Image 1 (cartoon, rainbow, N blue to C red):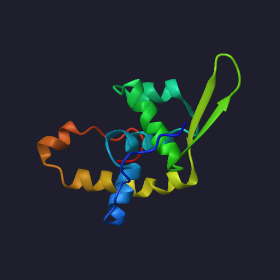
Image 2 (image 1 turned 180 degrees about the vertical axis):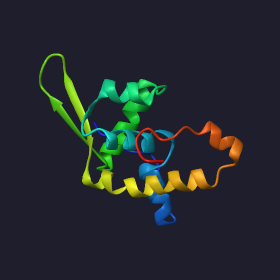
Image 3 (image 1 turned 120 degrees about the vertical axis):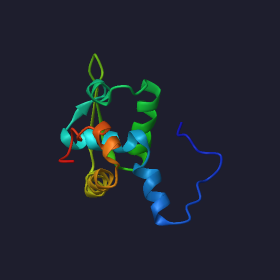
Image 4 (image 1 turned 135 degrees about the horizontal axis):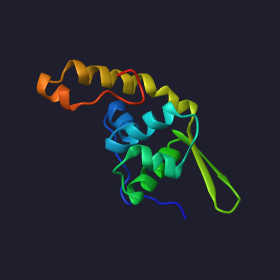
Amino acid sequence: MKYEPKIEKEFLCPLEYGLDIFGGKWKSRIICVLSANDVMRYGELRKELGNIADAVLASMLKQLLANNMINRIQYNEIPPKVEYSLTEKGRSILPILQSICVWSRENTTEELSRKLPPCMNCDQ
Protein backbone atom coordinates (compact mmCIF):
# COMPACT_ATOMS: atom_id res chain seq x y z
CA MET A 1 0.00 0.00 0.00
CA LYS A 2 1.42 3.37 -1.03
CA TYR A 3 1.48 6.20 1.49
CA GLU A 4 -0.82 9.07 0.58
CA PRO A 5 -0.45 12.33 2.52
CA LYS A 6 -3.62 13.67 4.11
CA ILE A 7 -2.93 17.19 2.92
CA GLU A 8 -1.50 17.79 -0.54
CA LYS A 9 1.62 19.94 -0.54
CA GLU A 10 1.15 23.39 -1.97
CA PHE A 11 4.16 24.90 -3.69
CA LEU A 12 4.18 28.63 -4.25
CA CYS A 13 7.30 28.64 -6.41
CA PRO A 14 9.62 26.20 -8.19
CA LEU A 15 12.28 26.66 -5.49
CA GLU A 16 9.94 25.16 -2.88
CA TYR A 17 9.37 22.15 -5.13
CA GLY A 18 13.11 21.64 -5.64
CA LEU A 19 13.88 21.93 -1.95
CA ASP A 20 11.16 19.40 -1.20
CA ILE A 21 12.78 16.94 -3.62
CA PHE A 22 16.46 17.29 -2.63
CA GLY A 23 16.55 19.59 0.39
CA GLY A 24 17.03 18.87 4.03
CA LYS A 25 19.84 17.30 5.97
CA TRP A 26 19.69 13.77 4.64
CA LYS A 27 18.41 13.81 1.05
CA SER A 28 21.25 15.97 -0.25
CA ARG A 29 23.81 13.91 1.68
CA ILE A 30 22.40 10.66 0.28
CA ILE A 31 22.60 12.08 -3.24
CA CYS A 32 26.20 13.19 -2.69
CA VAL A 33 27.26 9.84 -1.24
CA LEU A 34 25.63 7.96 -4.12
CA SER A 35 27.31 10.30 -6.60
CA ALA A 36 30.72 9.20 -5.33
CA ASN A 37 29.77 5.52 -5.70
CA ASP A 38 28.10 3.99 -8.72
CA VAL A 39 26.08 1.49 -6.68
CA MET A 40 25.68 1.08 -2.93
CA ARG A 41 23.91 -1.38 -0.71
CA TYR A 42 21.78 -0.16 2.21
CA GLY A 43 24.38 -1.06 4.86
CA GLU A 44 27.17 0.70 2.96
CA LEU A 45 25.04 3.79 2.57
CA ARG A 46 24.11 3.81 6.26
CA LYS A 47 27.75 3.39 7.29
CA GLU A 48 28.87 6.23 5.01
CA LEU A 49 26.20 8.58 6.39
CA GLY A 50 27.19 7.89 9.98
CA ASN A 51 24.61 8.94 12.53
CA ILE A 52 21.41 8.39 10.56
CA ALA A 53 18.67 6.26 12.11
CA ASP A 54 17.37 3.30 10.09
CA ALA A 55 13.83 4.69 10.03
CA VAL A 56 15.06 8.05 8.72
CA LEU A 57 17.25 6.46 6.05
CA ALA A 58 14.43 4.19 4.91
CA SER A 59 12.05 7.16 4.72
CA MET A 60 14.52 9.34 2.79
CA LEU A 61 15.25 6.53 0.34
CA LYS A 62 11.52 6.01 -0.24
CA GLN A 63 11.02 9.72 -0.92
CA LEU A 64 13.99 9.90 -3.30
CA LEU A 65 12.73 6.76 -5.05
CA ALA A 66 9.21 8.19 -5.36
CA ASN A 67 10.66 11.33 -6.98
CA ASN A 68 12.78 9.29 -9.42
CA MET A 69 16.06 10.57 -7.94
CA ILE A 70 17.43 7.10 -7.20
CA ASN A 71 17.14 3.56 -8.52
CA ARG A 72 16.51 0.58 -6.26
CA ILE A 73 17.30 -2.91 -7.48
CA GLN A 74 16.30 -5.86 -5.33
CA TYR A 75 17.83 -9.25 -6.00
CA ASN A 76 15.83 -12.31 -5.00
CA GLU A 77 18.46 -14.18 -3.06
CA ILE A 78 19.18 -15.10 0.52
CA PRO A 79 20.24 -13.00 2.28
CA PRO A 80 18.28 -10.28 0.45
CA LYS A 81 20.40 -7.90 -1.61
CA VAL A 82 19.27 -4.36 -2.49
CA GLU A 83 21.35 -1.82 -4.40
CA TYR A 84 20.83 1.92 -4.79
CA SER A 85 22.17 4.28 -7.44
CA LEU A 86 21.39 7.72 -8.84
CA THR A 87 19.09 8.14 -11.81
CA GLU A 88 19.85 10.68 -14.53
CA LYS A 89 17.44 13.02 -12.75
CA GLY A 90 19.39 12.45 -9.52
CA ARG A 91 22.69 13.16 -11.26
CA SER A 92 21.26 16.36 -12.75
CA ILE A 93 21.06 17.90 -9.27
CA LEU A 94 24.79 17.48 -8.55
CA PRO A 95 25.93 20.82 -10.06
CA ILE A 96 23.35 22.61 -7.90
CA LEU A 97 24.50 20.84 -4.73
CA GLN A 98 28.13 21.61 -5.60
CA SER A 99 27.20 25.27 -6.11
CA ILE A 100 25.62 25.29 -2.64
CA CYS A 101 28.88 23.87 -1.24
CA VAL A 102 30.87 26.65 -2.93
CA TRP A 103 28.45 29.30 -1.68
CA SER A 104 28.65 27.88 1.86
CA ARG A 105 32.44 28.01 1.87
CA GLU A 106 32.48 31.57 0.51
CA ASN A 107 29.87 32.85 2.95
CA THR A 108 30.92 31.17 6.18
CA THR A 109 32.68 33.07 8.92
CA GLU A 110 36.30 32.06 9.44
CA GLU A 111 35.56 30.39 12.78
CA LEU A 112 32.69 28.36 11.36
CA SER A 113 34.64 27.44 8.22
CA ARG A 114 37.13 25.59 10.43
CA LYS A 115 34.22 23.50 11.68
CA LEU A 116 33.08 22.64 8.15
CA PRO A 117 35.18 19.73 6.96
CA PRO A 118 35.89 19.42 3.25
CA CYS A 119 33.22 17.48 1.43
CA MET A 120 34.26 13.85 1.08
CA ASN A 121 32.21 13.35 -2.08
CA CYS A 122 33.03 16.36 -4.24
CA ASP A 123 35.77 18.95 -4.65
CA GLN A 124 34.33 21.31 -2.06
